[in-house]
Length: 256
Ligand code: ATP
Picture 1 (cartoon, rainbow, N blue to C red):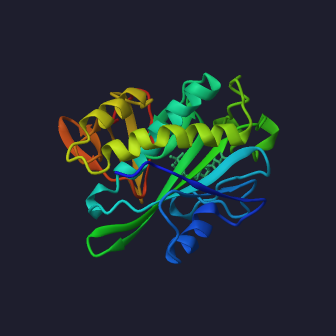
Picture 2: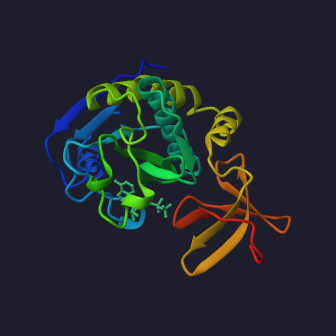
């Protein structure tokens, strides 16, 4: 397999790094193309939810992959980027970042980042995958909108050793091949799943999962071999897709 290389396109401002890179991907951009912006004016989370991307305060970037794998492997493309960020932040900032299913990066239960994976299909295969990262780096409390501030944090707020944004991105791109190239055609993701579970902040905890109007409570029991979440409800296992659900940890209370 060819060595991983990346080509970084830096933009002072963009609507959304994922949207910009999607256009590039449609025009044939190569695997490893990275779009990095100082700000996003219409940053997105899942379900088109707004991602606050204040100028110069965070790392907002998207990475293009062309993995030639079946569509069924899509969960992998949210799992491994989370691990790459965890490892990079530990190396770069000496901070322990944890993962909240399916795509949140948290420190002590406050959200410091998110991953937005979007894919284009060709038949049953992945044609390209775009992985967006939005990480809060220099934010202080007043930099978040009032509704987000109580649940959000940044590397600076957690007292991390903060390198500049360029070094953070370089660190992520340096650990990236280890996770991507070493796993992406492997039949089994056991090692990766075990590592993910070790960094999950609600492993074996009681959680509430909201999907549309349905709320289910149970024990988060990690991931199955396909990379889907496992929720145990009174001993019965329910599979959690990554798509539209939102999870929060709950205290042990009656009915949950
Ligand atoms: P949750 O799991 O917390 O319900 P989610 O995983 O569904 O959230 P995403 O869709 O990935 O979240 O991200 C969008 C949400 O994240 C927004 O609705 C907002 O609540 C929150 N958010 C937006 N910008 C930021 C930010 N810079 N830092 C922390 N949280 C943010």
